[in-house]
Image (cartoon, rainbow, N blue to C red; front, side):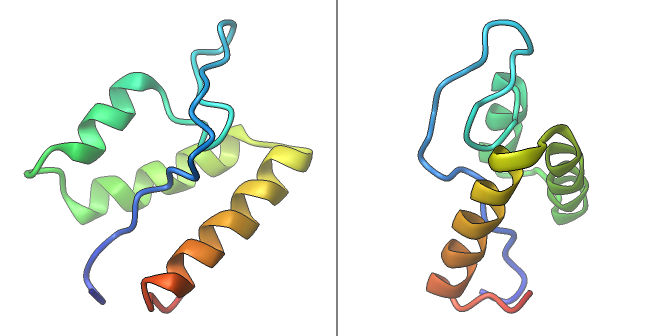
Length: 79
C-alpha cells in the first residue's frame, strides 16, 4: 500500500453549481473520473491533491485535512 495514492474523496459528494467543485474534496467531476482510471499516474494524483488543496479555504480545508489524514491512517499510509 505504500505506493498507493489514496483518493481524496471524504464522502461529502455534492458539487457547487457555481465553481463545479465538490464541497468535500474540491475536485471537478472530470478529475473524479480521472482518479478512477487504471492508467492514471501517481504523479498526476499527487499534483491533483496539491491543486484541490489550493482550492479550499477555511473550514472546508480544515475538514478535508482532518478527514483525509484519518483516511490515510486507516489505510496505514505514512504522510
